[in-house]
Every structure is written in C-alpha cells, then in structure tokens.
Image (cartoon, rainbow, N blue to C red):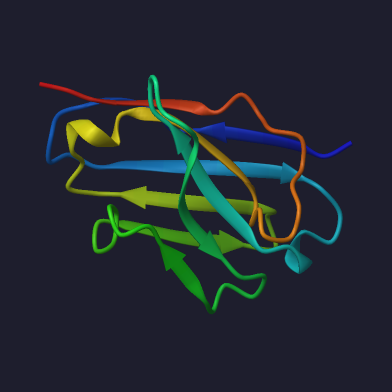
Length: 117
C-alpha cells in the first residue's frame, strides 16, 4: 500500500519561507505526475501545484504563482514544495498526492502550515 508522508510545516511570520517535503513509498514513482494540495479551515481542498513525472512541466494555482516552487527527486521518491513570501491566507494543512487528474493514492496526514505574526 502506498504511503505518503508530508513534513516541514510549522509556524512562520508573513513574508517568511518554508520547505515542505513528501516521501512516497511507491514503486515506479517516476511514472506518476504528483501534486501538492491544501485545505484551509472551513474551505475545500485546493490544488497548489503539480509536476509531471520527469519534472519538466509544472503548474501552479494563480494564488501561489511566483511564490511557490514544486520539484521532485525521482531517485529518492520525494516531492518538495518551496514556499516563500508566505501570506496568512496560505495557512492550511498541506498534502501531497498524485496529480488528481490521473488518480490518487491514499491521503497522508498532511503537514500544518500557519502564517501569522
């Protein structure tokens, strides 16, 4: 069974940065498009960024363009989200999973990101 483990969240001041990591225990990881998602309190889950299997194509939600960067290391089965210029509205639980257009693994626990002064 595939296991996704997210880490790197925490409390950060507005304008700060965080690096989230996702480790996936799945064979043939390099064949899956992956993504980062978030769920803010009282809101539905939304896609933050996606990355194609080779890492050469990425897409971002308009709300994070220019501030977040998604990357992957297929040799280590990891996906990373580098977040900068964080805003209070980025506060959410962040999850990684497959690009949902193509299917999904069982969701992990996520990692809490809180942006507050």
